[in-house]
Each structure stands twice: as structure tokens, then as C-alpha cells.
Amino acid sequence: MFDIVEAPFDMAALVTAVCEAGSGGLVTFVGYVRDRSDEGLPVEGLHYEAHRELALAELHKVGTEAVERFGIARIAIVHRVGELVVGEAAVGIAVSATHRGPAFEACQFAIDELKRRVPIWKKERYVAGDARWRENA
Image (cartoon, rainbow, N blue to C red; front, side, top):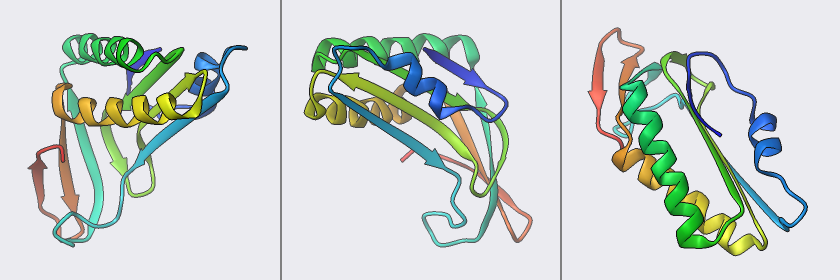
């Protein structure tokens, strides 16, 4: 399950999508909009944009690489686009594997590669009224 969505997503659905009888470990990650920028500026929200077709293709590639590299059972990744406010979930990842170690490693790999490769762009909206496009960290 890989998706780019405009509305809040259900983490329980991601967990359900990856659970299987042979999985002894399940790891999830949720990235939220926080109230401060990396420089400490007060943030009121974020605006995400994506090249949907390319982003979905790259999410599939990240997922396939995670399965092959770490031997996990399944992975699901969803990312929001549009306007989000502080406290809203922007990205969710669920990974199942036979054991916890590969599940943790694959989840870390997935978020790092998503931020590095997937064509999703983020603009921080500051409490002071200005906004700035940011590179993924």
C-alpha cells in the first residue's frame, strides 16, 4: 500500500495492510507537523506538494528496495499533500517482518529514502505570516 493523499490517513489501515501471520515484528512511524522550524521559528503549518505520478512510482521503488534489502514481509507508506496544521500527521509508514530488527531497519530506510528521493516538497508557514520552501532533512 503506497499512497499520496489530501485528507488525514488512518494508521490502523496501514498496520492492517502489512500484518500477516508470519510476522513477529511490526514497526510504525508517523511524522507530524511540529510547532517550530529547525531554526526555532514558530510554525503554524506546512504546505506539501507532490508530483503524484512520480511520487507514487518512487514510493513503490523505496518499498521494493526495503523488502529486498531487509527481508521484510510487507511495507505501507502514505504521505499527505495540501495544507496541514501543527499536530497533523504528514507521513505514515508501517513495516512487518519475521523479527523486529529488520522491521526497524526497513522503517528507518523508508523514511530516509522518502525524504531523499520522493518528489514531495514542503513549505513552512510561520506564525509571523511569511512562508518558505524547505529542503527535506
